[in-house]
Length: 350
Image (cartoon, helix red, strand yellow):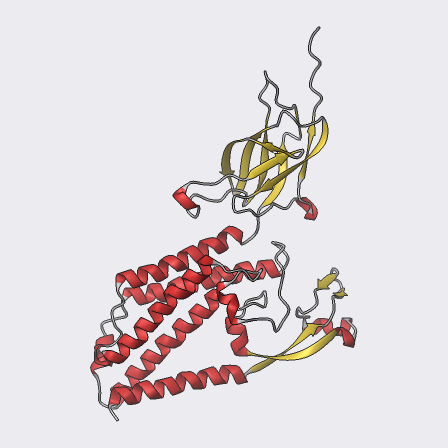
């Protein structure tokens, strides 16, 4: 058997062994069989939805029939996110890690058996594109993990899937089970790059890791950037925190009345918006659309200046906002709005 063939086969066996080991290493978790409420000693009341994990320290605070033990593999934690769904970014990162490990082990084994060409070719350093391919999925995975963790903790109102419902289809689907073009691009371009890497290394083993064509690396990197931008936009959800001033006149034929709506993540930034132009939210005052005059960001707070609609009736009214991607802003204390008092227009002089 040729040294390179031997190296590739043993490297494949090594990768499969690591895979099997990750499957065998298991962790016991506690899954809620119904919605559970408990209060830790000296803490605040906690709510755990059905199918979610209960901390081991909290099992003594709930009834035995309210949870069941499950044994989950370490491999599961490497590719499944905090929301209990298969993570696109973690899976892509996992695949690239195993592909690079396979290539390194194969060239090392061939070198030890006397076929030094492949390993010698690697001494010149790793091609920059590989750092991009590893770094792109890594950055996307970190950002996606932050988002999923924040969502699972209730910061964005996202649903958390029950433990055990992770499925391969979630690689290219959103949380509602609908196809997501951004996830599809991310998976497809990286899959093509992975296949190219493996096949080319097999065909030209003595040349070491093959040079990744800039076009292929660019497509994979662009898809990772787009995936990260999509996660960034939705990582915390838009929030509306206040309106200034808290009382205003309605707009009239002779008066243009404006207020400032304050919040976070209300405006889609120009660097991630289609067309490169920042996108303002849609604002309603008292159920009527308010014309957006300008948007600014001061110390992390979005300030959206809008014109008070002429049709709005005097008295306290709700001010709501919907970000340009269709996500409705949440208000203070779990509400969906802030309050603006509409003043009674002065009576016209006789």
